[in-house]
Length: 616
Image (cartoon, rainbow, N blue to C red; front, side, top):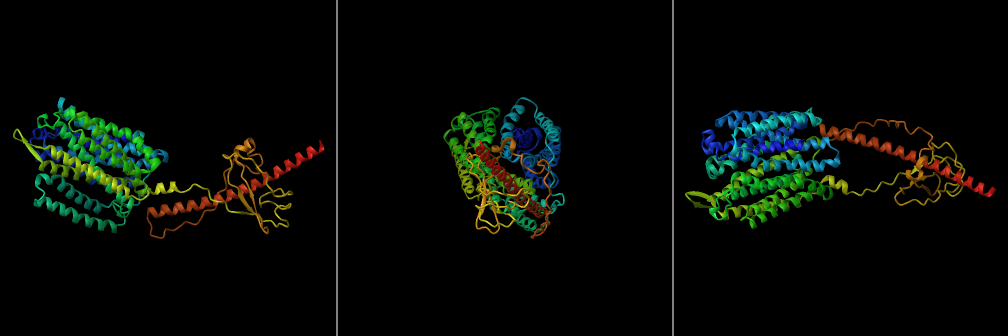
């Protein structure tokens, strides 16, 4: 259900792409003004994603996903009813809020699923972004070509409402982990201003001119506001984005790789779609209609979904770092295939499928890398910031590819078109960026989760159990004292353990019993439950079905570096760990007592058999 919600959220981004050429006629506005229909969704989504992620940590991910569905429905209805530019821009801005559903869904998986299912679910949820984008193009093109364009928005309104109902019915509530915190409103405004300045300057720089005063002023303002915002976030008690967490090498390098992968993904889609639709008279265009071009690229979204399960298995076996590295290399291979197969539609379809496989591997690994490096209370915020990095990568990609194709052109029939060398240059740039993402991945430190799994699984040697009884003979001599304090029967035979021919699969480490005053220790091997069979509880002197006695409550641990939810959670975990260690020591003593009783029983049975044989 969360994957379907992610598909619905990403579908809104490509919903109007087939209408771009018709929007000036439909809305009675210029082409420069109607481009805001696309830009508004990008800007609102980029600004709202980190804010929604923080609110998800504070009030619960499921609740915020339901909140995000409201502007999705409202924006779709506004666009369907509006027939002019302003209502369309407002509606598309509201739809941009739905992008926050994707990182919220990824973070909710950590709370809702058992650990062994989190990896595959994250891979599927992450691939939903590419699936929605790939499926949105042919569906939107078909509706725009054969029906009224308003049906697109009515359909998206129905889909959004259906997703909200299914989330309400099928997705369990996730806990709110920072209810005591508050939203950093000033930080949200500062981040929004910096992102709007940056993305607006990048996305409109080609139209306004990269050397124009407006573009330079926006890019300069983005840098200044970002620096001031960072200083504020480092000083405020409840920051919108914890910059200390994002500065961790694993998080920082993963976000950098996200920018590069987002660049490579979007550059390929921009180039291949234009090559498919350019007239065949150019010598390199393939002359496909908009609907046909969308259908040629539709399999790439399905390949992204198909590779998600493989990516999850690869991450489980080799770690998400390996999946991210492999994904970046596969994207570069996809660019190489596009350069070699530019002359055929089926060749571009194969190249797009290969590139989408790489994107699926990379996108499935990024949330796993992020969540293994941040506390559970910051998963939604950290994943939302990672999604923001991908959005910045796609925006920069659109600007760079636009500049390249605008500078390398040909003239045909009075029209200026991108040249073949321009397309090849853009593909080479995308390939180089994908290889750069692979190199960044190699610098990632070993994830904490992998480090934990890589530690040897050898059990610690149990502490010696001291027998509080005096001994007047060596270990091999008879001992007339209890084996341990709780043993009710005396040991009147030598404390020597018979040799057991245990199978290799049932041998477990021996327990060590130290007898005061002796120069040696007695090692009593544990007998696996499989050997005792129905007699495993036959010699216990207490009721094993009763609940174990509660261990005394340890003193609460106080955090040394200030308070806060993270410190309280750490203190709770330490306190719980201390109780578990105390309980483990009690169980070790209980095991030693039971082994002593079993040893006594075996010696008595041996003596009985010996006497019985002697009598016969």
